[in-house]
Length: 138
Image 1 (cartoon, one colour):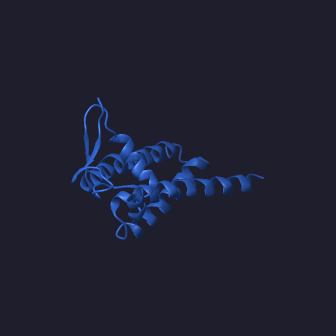
Image 2 (tube, rainbow, N blue to C red):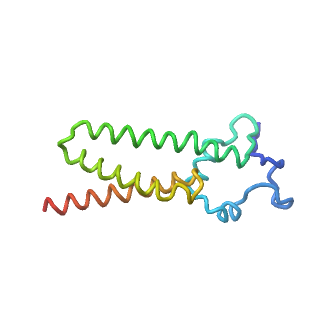
Image 3 (cartoon, rainbow, N blue to C red):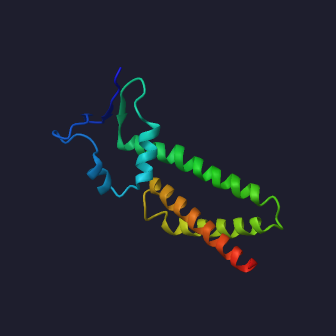
């Protein structure tokens, strides 16, 4: 059995202009990671799947952002259980910086783009803190 990913207006058709194609997806400025997540978690398995913009936003807000936020919170809580450690200090500084940046941009971008911002911020900040720590230990 062959399953399809359909669009809210019917089956994807480049000729009829129905659907979201690579150039359309690029023009939305939604990060590629967001598209990848949505398409992987909603790929047709045994029956046809319907793509809607509302579903895309709902899944990213409820599944991905909530899970990412929960993960970050759990990791930071775990690290901070030993308040005298370097990792606890790192987590506290990182947490303050991330929260500050999120507050600054939350009204400027749709909520489903927050994933991209948070994941980039997480990697960049942890990398900078680790580099700082390594340099002070030399």
